[in-house]
Amino acid sequence: MMKDKIFSISGAAEHLGVSALTLRKWEAQAKIRAFRTPGGHRRFRKSDLDIILGPDAKSTEKLRAIIKKIESLDLIKDGEERWNAIIKELKEIV
Image 1: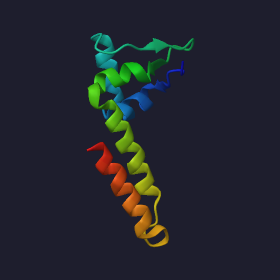
Image 2: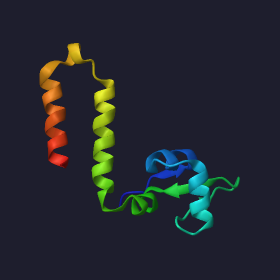
Image 3: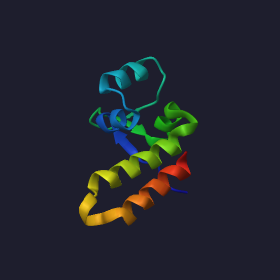
């Protein structure tokens, strides 16, 4: 069994595309579960965050990974072949 990734409140907010304040409100409203570190800091499990994202969570994750690849590419250096591979990955998601 794979261990669930744990996020800080800022990491969880980024993962969901919301503010940390929104996450605090959602926790207070019991819309999302968090646990606390011994120091009192909120932590969120990826599996709980993905419930908020819904069934498209896997697609969202794949798109984020592709965006990171695109951001790291140098169009001139990597050339057309690399871009075609990224386009293929995108088409597989859609």
